[in-house]
Amino acid sequence: MTPVAPEPLWIRTGPPIPVDREHVLHPDVVVAGAGLTGLATAVALARAGRRVAVCEARTVGAVATGNTTAKLSLLQGSVYGEIRAHAGVEALRAYAAAQRAGADWLRAIAESVDGALRDEPAFTFSTTDEGDAALEREAEALEASGVDAVWGPTEQTGLPFAVSRALRMEGQAALHPRRVLAALAAELRSRGGTIVEGCRVTGLEDAPDGVGVATTRGVLAAAHLVVATGSPAIDRAGFFARLEPSRSVVGAYAVDGPLPEGMHLSVDPQARSLRTADDGAGGRLLLVGGGGFRTGRGDAGAMLADIDAWTAEAFPGARRVTWWAAQDYRTITRLPFAGAEPGTDGRVLTATGYDKWGMANGAACALAMAGEILGERPSWVDGLRSPQVGVRDAATAVGANARVTKEMASGWTKALVSRDAEPPAEGEGRVETRGAHPVAVSRVDGRLCAVSGVCTHLGGILQWNPAERSWDCPLHASRFDPEGRVLEGPATQDLARMDDAPAR
Ligand SMILES: Cc1cc2nc3c(=O)[nH]c(=O)nc-3n(C[C@H](O)[C@H](O)[C@H](O)COP(=O)(O)OP(=O)(O)OC[C@H]3O[C@@H](n4cnc5c(N)ncnc54)[C@H](O)[C@@H]3O)c2cc1C
Ligand code: FES
Image (tube, rainbow, N blue to C red; front, top):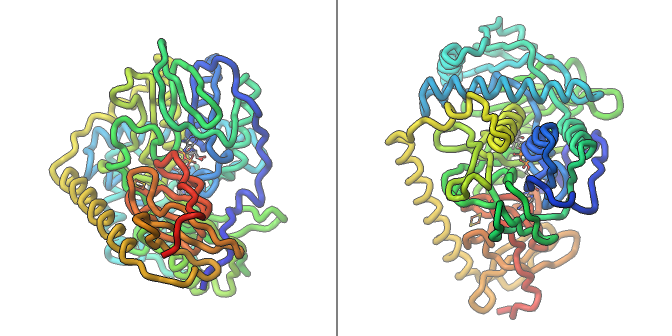
């Protein structure tokens, strides 16, 4: 069954975020992207007296930050163990220092805003033998990193089902991401910075002493460009080929009876993430997320059904109030990247690869990029860059790119043999060939739309995502709405309309 359209709880319960009609004149820095990373970078620069113009392709928080679960936590599932395995202990310590710096910076802002932060303990738990082993590895890695988590009595998790082991960390926080974004936006504007929505950065042009930033609203000249677009939209280093996108679903449920205190994440093969949040009417909802699939290769509707079924069993009588989905990216070493893009003379900086821990990471990477521009780079930044990619990780990267090539070939083959004659039914979409070109045809709210079925990034054949009513690229995770407008991912150009393409 196709679920009702997704709508993040944060929009329902968060404030409007005022923005500007025009960019500040002669900015020192242009920031692409008004998610957490972009706005935090802009605020850090504005505090140091820089004039900052933020270009947001859609609306503030439209992508990952507005669709997150927003746990601000140094306890992060199995991340520390993964980083130690892929990048070594020195990098792990640098990562822990970055998390502390990012979390402290963001907490200071969120604490001053009504309803933006709730202090909560964080738990990582297991219910299976594999989960127990993963938790042991995580505890060792946390100790090596200098982060203090404790083994807690499992009954203290407050979860209504049996847990075999649990790590606990006090002093973490559940954020309301839209309230945090609103505070960042207000501070930036009070310091003379501007945010213009519907302004997509599309490329770079030559400029004598800096960068010429081409946008859908004209060219902006500045000393630096910060690309804070999730997967970098201006990508001089081929990040897209080394990032692994993962899309996840979150459901918000009204529950009869007590809700668990704190924020919870399992490290079992079937991951589950839980926290609570205000429902906007004086009550609290349970948020449940879990797992992830590669964008364009999985089914958000099936994942939502799975989360619904799990929640109904764990919390009998739970009723889903709303749901949403989002994606994030991880690097081969599991470390985030923040810094200058190679080949840009330090003029273009980017941050990416938060592996679904972008609250602390987004703020930390903002501090790293602002520090780089201001000549005050935090001491932990170099530690995040040092590790060599090992043989196993290099092989993983080669394997991932081989899969992308195979996906590309099979997408084109399927599109070219498509023979359906009937137009799609309501809520459906498919790629068919008209003349020599794959055309993506969908019907949403009765409207039949035909757009190019070829991703404008690097030519992947798009897949219909019926639950979210979007065209998703299985290669590097760009997404487009039924009318062809870019929603997210590395693509910067909309899909061409194909309403006049000859039907076969
Ligand atoms: C389901 C899910 C749950 C998560 N839960 C947590 C959690 O509990 N705790 C945690 O720490 N992290 C969590 N994360 C991760 C976290 O939400 C993200 O890492 C973080 O929000 C990323 O912020 P960002 O600013 O880098 O990206 P985004 O919020 O995606 O912002 C990028 C912005 O750039 C804009 N943009 C894109 N291209 C252009 C362009 N060319 N020009 C101009 N603008 C452009 C987009 O429209 C967007 O607004 C979760 C992620 C997911 C997917
Ligand atoms: S996102 Fe790279 S080809 Fe589509």
